[in-house]
Image 1 (cartoon, rainbow, N blue to C red):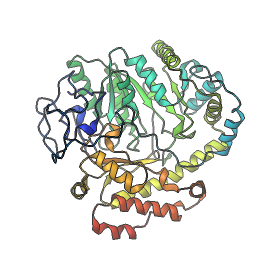
Image 2: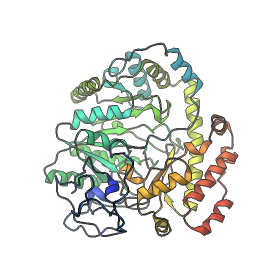
Image 3: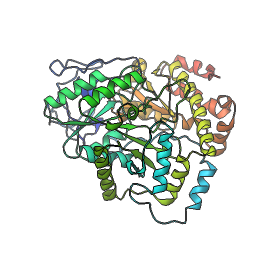
Image 4: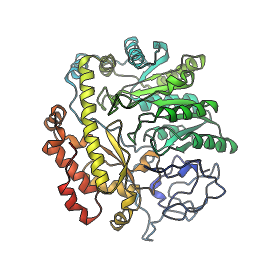
Length: 498
């Protein structure tokens, strides 16, 4: 099993990854099953994979796994291109923004508190904690203020939780793929991250059998797996894990003594809330699950960082809460009073907030469905999006024509689509997926228009897909995704679903 090197720039290693649980390609329609064994690595699709790296070994910056020194392009024309001064920790695509102007009522609350120059106490003031308790209680997760912590965004909270649970030598498990901001916080603490494959039908929650095999192998190598981070409503795949899968995975994780962190940032963005069943792991095993919610998911603008965490109502939960507050204190991770005021207002969910949230979800659901149709019509694969403001596309069927354009991996695909679409299109390697896989996350916010007026029109229109700026953006998306010249005419004739 190969350990993840925190300093390694994946652009430096452009050969397909070795077979093993740390590099199992998983995409739409693929079911990886149990984690492959190291003793029979074999080649992976798309190239010859070198032998696995033993525990404790890693690839230093600029070194290939085959020991040939600085990485070279396969064509032999010198060193591989490197990201412009972006290391594996410093670069990470942000959460998909809703692309809409700020709700006026939220702006008014923030402005009313703008004269306050101080910050809230570490972990949040009582009013904010009470508001968070009300938010979770309405979702079937009752709690009390002394089991809640607030921070300036979910990354700060996850860093503090990881430091409290795994900062003393433990290992961290995450699904493959996973949110781009999960793994860097473990790497900052010097902790290895093990990616566990997800099943074919959804992302965010590991396959239970692959999870058990990964835990077994990490322990066999002397590791100490202690923390599993997962997400039922997922970034980047925009899928929702079915309850039966979640139950099996959570049962397997808790039986192995893992503590779970459930990232529920996107739980309020279900595209079909009356048809999609979303359960929190904390409803199943409340004593073993910490819930983290970034309010940028559905309640606040992404530029107003605020998040809340809910800890188990046990003695262990009390100790974890106290250690997290210690870490937040050391980081100086406090909420500014104006942002805290807006967060408190949003968590209370008054009518202006709920009405805007529901309208925003409806809009992004329609645009995401149309974007999915465009991606599939262009010849790519993608699971139908069920939550969030994004979708995850796999361009493996277009590998040959993309190769003719110089696209050989996810970084090349990211560069090409970002340039052609004029918007960020982060490759799957940003989310822990295989560098050699041609996967990309596409956000729907940039498809709503280029000005506040256009975006507002998209929000209030009864037929947003018929607006010229939305229709044009969707046609441009399909055209950019099309690698075959003879698909361009189809792209011009394509009609967004009504």
